Length: 245
Image (cartoon, rainbow, N blue to C red; front, side, top):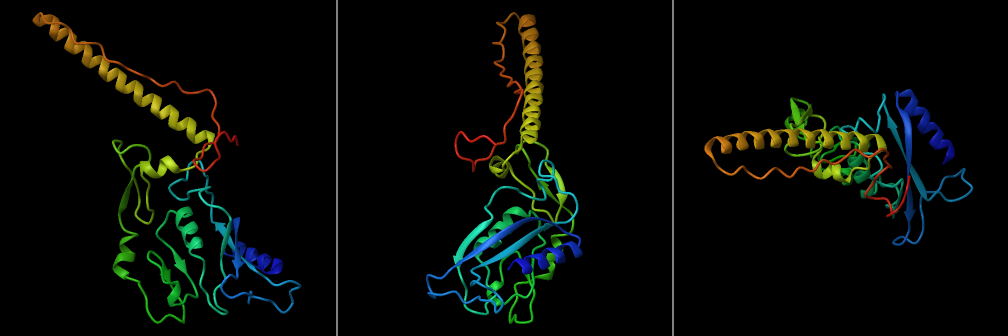
């Protein structure tokens, strides 16, 4: 298994990718009672497979959240071993890929009919059917899509349509680094200051109009401005309460 992983990493490098993670599939045998994937030159029976995760180019977790969604899953899966010779992968693996890679270009090679999945392009000589729709596929790479990073009331960020974009609900679940937390706090502080200035200007205008007409002035606006903390700790909804990272 070690030699196979070494060859896999060499293949990634040849294709121009940088390996960033290994996802391990531990195969259970509750149904079959035994594991079938054994290698002639192995000392012990192989009951695991590895998925190498590669990234091409520079991807920064702090600023490239429209491309990747980091730290949302674990690197270990426990699933029943398929029948001997089958190419079925665990459903958890597809979910990890879909949660991590925020693009529409999802390709599976050497697939069988059992590998066909919505949102994926499956290729293989053993296929007898396909869910590939050329017109839908091409539309994913034309034009732009709207992405709302913070609030639905903000102007959306326009991304290339091959990316899925994000929503405030998704961003509330996204693990955040101290840098991201500081930027969000500063943005929220600026937004509150702008809202306070507008409310104060409106109050002064209404007060001047009330004084000119001999009416009671309106009550002053209640403005709350959240200060920006001096330090931040990494935050994730998946961390145990009170955990510091």
